[in-house]
Image (tube, rainbow, N blue to C red):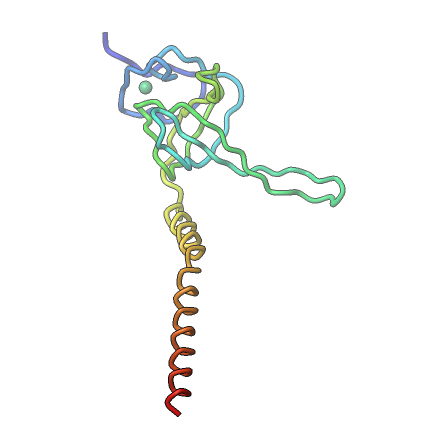
Length: 156
Ligand SMILES: [Zn+2]
């Protein structure tokens, strides 16, 4: 039997790859229903699972303004789509696949521009926090200078 891409009822670009994943909406038995979101993959280290993040706005009545918030959703990542970190993906709700997973990736829309730069900036921020070691060295130097000064005074 040749595998064919099943029609899931949502207009998406079909990937050319095929897979034997039971929980793939195109090649398995999983049905898509419910909400559809588009977000960025921020972690793809788990097996067949990605974490997708997207911004949303929350209204605060007291200030009559909107607050920026972020939503993180864990979604099943079928082998035929194989989304990686920095990819923009479309996810659809499905039946619960595990304790925390009830979404599935249905389309990979390509890399987000500037994602790698953002991650580099984050890493630089982490490095800056490790700087206090330098200040310790500075203190040691000051101690040495004081000793020198004291020795000079002894000589005089
Ligand atoms: Zn598949």
